[in-house]
Image 1 (spheres, rainbow, N blue to C red):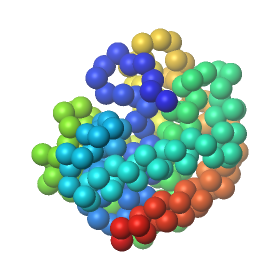
Image 2: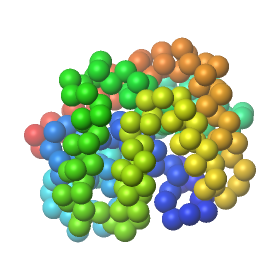
Image 3: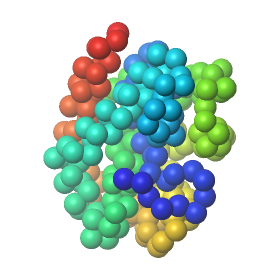
Image 4: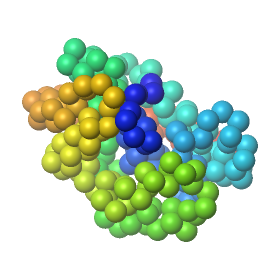
Length: 208
C-alpha cells in the first residue's frame, strides 16, 4: 500500500534486507529486487532479463507477504494504534528479526554480507532510477541494514519515516510495541519467514 510522504522517497519501501536475502546470489537479480518499488508497470522492460527477473520477484514477494495469514495477525495487533501504517511497521519489525538472527539464515556474517551488497549496487549504479539512487545513498551512508539488528536502529528508522509522512503516523513510538510484544512478533516472523523463503525459491526456479 503506498503511503503518503513529504519527501521523494516512499516510506513503504522498508523491508530491504528480506528482499535482498530472498534474491539468491545473482547480483543483477538482487538489484532488480532492490529497485522493484521504483519501477512501475512496463518500465521493467527497459532493463535486461536478470534485472526484470528481480523486479518480478520483488512483486511476488510483496503479494505473498501482504496476503499471508500470519502477517495479517501482526498487522492487526498494530492497526488500532497506527491504522494504515501498520504494514510498514510490520515490515520493519520482520527485517529486525532477520538481521538480529541472521546467522540462522545465512553463513556469511551480516556486516560482510551488507558490505558486499553495497559494493554490488555501486558497481551497477547506472541501473538505479533517480529516486532509488537517493535512497541507496542514505542507506549505505548510514548502514540501515546493520542498524535494523538493534531495537535502537528500529526506533531511528521508524522515527525517520514518521517525519516524512504527510499526516501524523505515530510511527516514532512503534518501537515500544516491538519491545512490549517482542516474543510474539518474533514467533510470527519465525512462523512466516520459512514459507516466504520457499515461495521465493519456487519463483526463482523459473529461471535458475
